[in-house]
Image (cartoon, rainbow, N blue to C red; front, side, top):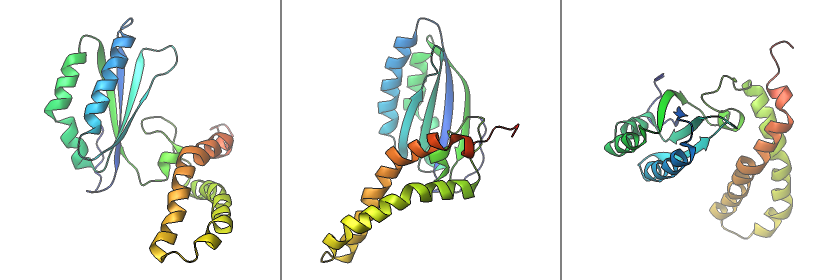
Length: 188
């Protein structure tokens, strides 16, 4: 496993690749639900996503933990070892890669792939393009109606509205729309 050292408290993402024996895909997917529930209860877990390339027998698990120490605790836990023992006849873990991220990269890249994150200036500009219209909208619609609210409550409105909108809708859309600019082909 590639294990760059990340400072305590910095989120870390690990990608595991599993080779599933043909004909055992349903059994493997059932197993993914169980180990996912188990891992989500583990301290420091910030999410798990499973990816399956179309028509393939390889599955990828993308795990995010709050810091490398909690990830290491999960990787060495008895619970994880038990789940791995259960799946031995069905699939084999073929690779894993650990990567520390600073935040914005996760909107633009998938850890464990060969695609590099765009330059930070492109990520910042794309984020501005996504955030500016919603900032304007919040300032126009919400701010005038919340002037009498206490400052901490007024300040909370902006991130509560903006961050989920950016994370789940705007940034994935912008990443797709601006794909050729963010990730130019090497021959350009």
